[in-house]
Image 1 (cartoon, rainbow, N blue to C red):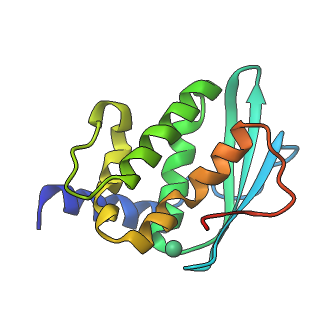
Image 2: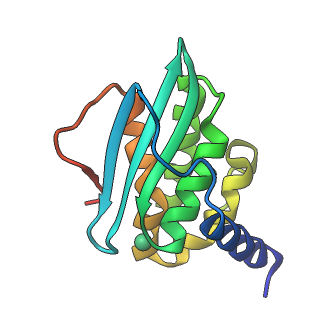
Length: 152
Ligand code: ZN
């Protein structure tokens, strides 16, 4: 087993077992639901803004280990960032997951998110990994969708 794969599995197991920022939020500025019909993952993402800062992020719902750990890691990385900083992280993550699994990744932009590079080998799982991020993207862009954001 490669080091990268070992780290990937460790992060996913850890965040799946002990999801960070998991639970409802009182008086959020934005609530976006995300749904991945291929896997059945369904999450609500809550955001609170303080001016240009993402002051708080929480999530709740159900999903597979990859979707849940990705959402959990997302909340830890986005909290305290500016909206632009959070958007940049989404862009870097989304871009990485669209590339072939042998393509080099931008480790500087991705930071801890690089552990999800291994997901690229499993295209169905990419939707699990990006679900919460698509909801975040929607929330950052001031959309209040009537329908849940889906990966389709
Ligand atoms: Zn899933």
